Amino acid sequence: MKLMKNLFVTLLFLSSGSVMAAGGSGAVLDAVPLNMNDKQSLQNGAKLFVNYCLSCHSASYARYNRVAEDLEIPLALLKQNLMFTTEKEGDLMQTTMPVEDAKKWFGVAPPDLSLVSRVRKPNWVYTYLRAFYQDESSPSGWNNSLFENVAMPHALFELQGVQRLMGKMDADELHAMDAHAADAGDQSDAYTVVGDAKFELVHQGMLSPAEFDKAMMDLTAFLVYLAEPVQLKRKAIGVYTLTFLIILMGLCYLLKKEYWRDVH
Image (cartoon, rainbow, N blue to C red; front, side, top):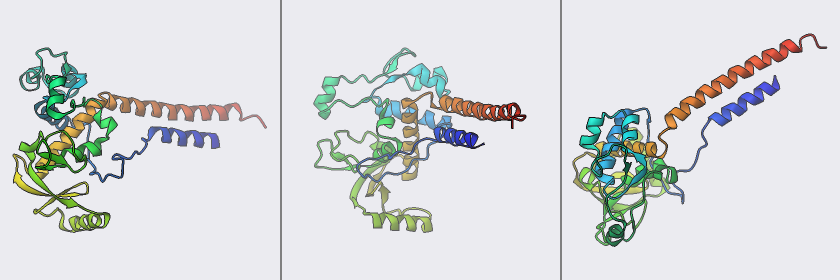
């Protein structure tokens, strides 16, 4: 009986994912509530990626037809709305920007984003996408409170608008803000908080702050999908496997009792 309990605890431990810090260096990150079963969210993330990211960043481990199949996008819509860098459905999702030109314009070639959510973690990606602000001292005119002096300009500014950094908040201020938000039900309209940075929205973009946050959640979900397209199937197989092992363990225990019933 003790052996069976130990095996059961071990199986539960193996089935649970390990909790890892998403930010590193003590960064304050916003949690992103991802639902990888939400195909509409993933489809919107794919649209945002192709329209705003693929012009500079590749996803060279993904193919258009595989993305369309996994996200249930009809091939006609794929060709019409998502294939801007190639005419072949089976091609990899690669940018057309030459590396040398990218280095000349940005000082560094934009990285491939296929595995960014595995390297940086989803919470980091979600916080980073919302943390751009106008900075006239920067060569691009933009900066990022999570990744200071980043070479990347704010490619999504027409959706978010232009925000100004008001300053960083310490732990006590963040705790007080969370308590106030819980009582009021929302943040103040005068500013937004991303991570530990407070921003003033100077010019609103095409989306409201809440709509932009939802769009960045969708884009983050798509980047998580790119890093491991088979994760949903893997998790389903894992559940079936663990269920089979638990049942088998019970049957083995009953068989053991039957064999040893007459042994004194």
